[in-house]
Amino acid sequence: MTNVLWLQGGACSGNTISFLNAEEPTVCDLIADFGIKILWHPSLGLELGDNLQALLRDCISGKIPLDILVFEGTVVNAPKGTGNWNRFADRPMKDWLLDLSKVAKFVVAVGDCATWGGIPATAPNPSQSQGLQFLKRQQGGFLGTEYRSQAGLSVINIPGCPAHPDWISQILVAIATGRLNDITLDEFNRPQTFFKSFTQTGCTRNVHFAYKASVAEFGQRKGCLFYDLGCRGPMTHSSCNRILWNRVSSKTRAGMPCLGCTEPEFPFYDLEPGTVFKTQTLMGVPKDIPPGMKRQDYAFLTVVAKNMVPTWAEEDIFTV
Image (cartoon, rainbow, N blue to C red; front, side, top):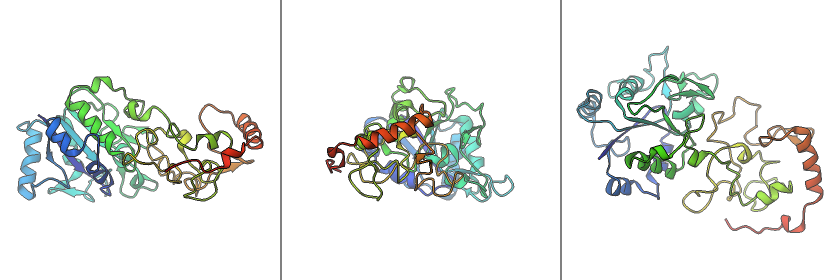
């Protein structure tokens, strides 16, 4: 039996909703087939008041083994470092988190808010929000760079706004079945099995990207979303076009640009206004270009490719 405790800090519950829609495996599969026991979850837990506090204290004391601590949402430190803007079970949530993280065998941060602070941590950050071990790209976060769980691991980050449900459930299964050693984490503590490739991998619009055949309106089923609509698929690490949402689609397949929500900078409000929704250009070349390319080379490639667009690249050949 693997005990899982899920807590929620400064959050919108988006990752909870995503998790409850998991399909491979489902939440019921986690319990029935993989021996996972959900001690408490903000949307599923039955304990309230004194009973909930007793459960949390039993986890801290070791009376109830805490195998996996899942945290969703930011760690709110305001006002003045007290954390009183986010109280839970008669204490600041950050105090519960600190105590529970010391005894948890594994700690999993779910969603952008828990991993790097997300939207609440965007400047000027009045809630003094942090991720568990990062604040945007800066290492440290609430638990600090040196933090390690009882299993000797750093926080396992599963970013996204929200995170894909299968990313969450499959990592829980990997831990419960002792296969976490098969999963390598990147420099941001993300499982490479989900975050090594770019979102562009598997995108049905890649042929349009290659020929710089752009689309200027949301929802259109043909044309690349990068040049005019600011799609961040070529520089965002995720498997959204390999592991489809609801096993059906993805943002780019539905005609919406990738917003880069698995990267520490999301929601990119710290950059130039409109960067998320409109590609910023410099002499006709996007300011954010795919990694490994020089701007002058990319500019030349763009001109050549646009002059060679074949007729079929303008045709609507995709099913969404």
